[in-house]
Image (cartoon, rainbow, N blue to C red; front, side):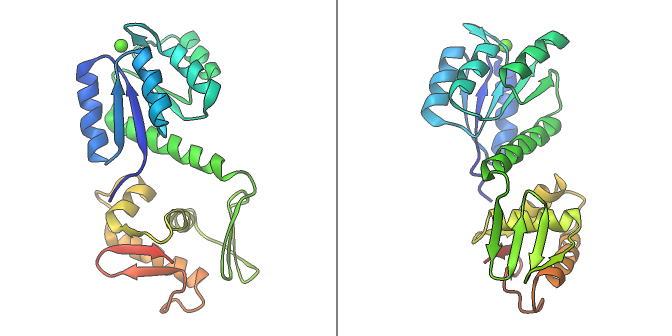
Length: 228
Ligand code: CA
């Protein structure tokens, strides 16, 4: 499944660039790499990535300046990845507008989870407060985390709610089982496709008039699900 999110890596350590590239490629992110402050800013302005991974010690300056310059024009999430440990440093960065801080050495799995969280947060805030989604008799109020069917509130479990929001955010597109398991649980290994089927069945019972002939969520046999 194609991942449309784009990432700018700002890092001058070739080994780390390689390490990050392999994992981001595996997750199908599109990304650019910059080794200096100057390159970082020109790539940022040219490509407007969805997220920035930022090292602090760069040959021509400090990552802190990159955060400040980005914040002048955009609210793009910035995750600082640095060996610097001092608390004062972290506070300065967060004050300048960095979204998260990961200390080197780090686990790739953790960084990937933080990337997903930062992207989700950015997406949510761009939806704006009080935004709702309506499709026929189905209403989702994102701010209140409330779902209604034909004017009646239905109670979804957190997983059911996540599944519904994921499908709506990608409406019209087929989401594979693997992709959904990864997005919902954060990993696909060890979670059976059958688990997803169980949640899907309970979700449909709650939001579909006739769960065996669903109007909202259709099954793409052997592949996954799609929100109409
Ligand atoms: Ca460095």
